[in-house]
Image (cartoon, rainbow, N blue to C red):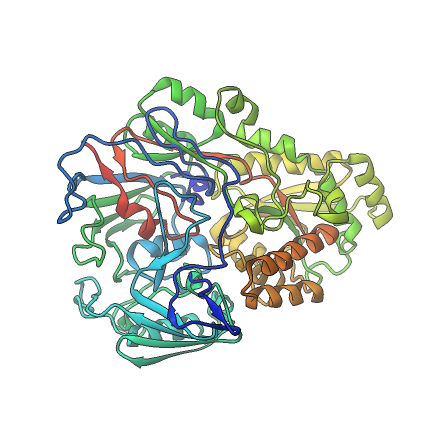
Length: 596
């Protein structure tokens, strides 16, 4: 699919008594709630999806029933078999999820590898308002929120491929995966910095100790940025996970041709039978949007991320296409090279950063990327919301930059070229060349269009901008995203399935702290929100972080990803659901079936 659409693709509290958790399996709590910011609608024949996630999902149309669902066979009305085909714009950075922190590696890993938990995917639910549910885990229990007992489902097996050969999954595999995740030099080790230990008790029981009580730990168990469970043979020389994938997930990798395609078969031993419903899943690698759109029009792709400018014409062209449109929880942002890369740069002065924000017209950028007025005139429920350093789709955790609660920093979100120029002058900016960097080969046409417009805004506002486009895998992700660059960079942030993930990445010890921002007040608020079990109090800390970033503009939130995005589906596609994060291959794809 178009990379933009790729983005679209818990524990929380138990009852407290005397400041302690009651001992129970924890499946719900403070981590989520109150999303519903923008209704999604199924239009045309049926569904509506988008370039990026969030909003209130609506069930797809009723299919012609091939049978009758019964208590003995609740899926009796679902046709099984066939091949589902979509597209992607590039190869993943790695097949081994522990070799790269890139979303491309995490997304492909979810086809084959399992986690303890996964994000629930429901046809009638906003993916940002649902809890986590068990994957390989049977339960996760705690008495105090800090010491957790995680139970594996007994009898689950890896895929029947040598040298693993369908053997049972045990905690030995969990420990081996944990050791690789936390090894020195692991690109994702900081994601579990708050997990102080993980130990096997027996073949099916794991004890996890956290540095402090957490109401979001089970959601962390579902996060594809953290613990995938690979067989121990992947780490002891049994097979090379850089070139081969053997897991316990819903799909078996049959074929990978670089820059051509992936082909997967359903795992006949997958624990959540009878899923997957289709026999095969294929991903055609098609870099250009125009080509993938042509393939969708021709019926060769079952789903496709559609640019907003094309929605109405495609809808008229084929009234049988299904559509789903959702408000994303996807953050695009500008960030500045850190002090060790650019010690005397003008953006060391916060007035320069504030000016950069005030030179960008967020409403116009959203219109440019998401065709808002035309879609509104056609009767579609789309709106313009502004991203904060927490994206607009994240419900109660998002602080509206135009609202009364944003404080003094709210004025720096407003488009005001005159004040921006005054701030530039006050900062001492004297016309130095400012590189403007982004990856133009990965995120899709909407992102590229907005990036070009942002660079023009900055140039018109008085910055001596020089545009530098980079290859995502070769340069942008390993260098610029990690803060090794000079200038202003523009990109997407990881859409974390738990909102707290943004703050360590952007302000903490994560090696991908892009600007190497170290604000003691934000760090303190991050520490407080991580351990707070009361949702209202936690929301206050998270809103305070957004206020502080607005005042200093360490990161300048932008509008790519902040408009309603769309996915088209062929008429025969059924089982359309949504998720958040990178687990689409596990959480969404097994539900698809083809009514042919």
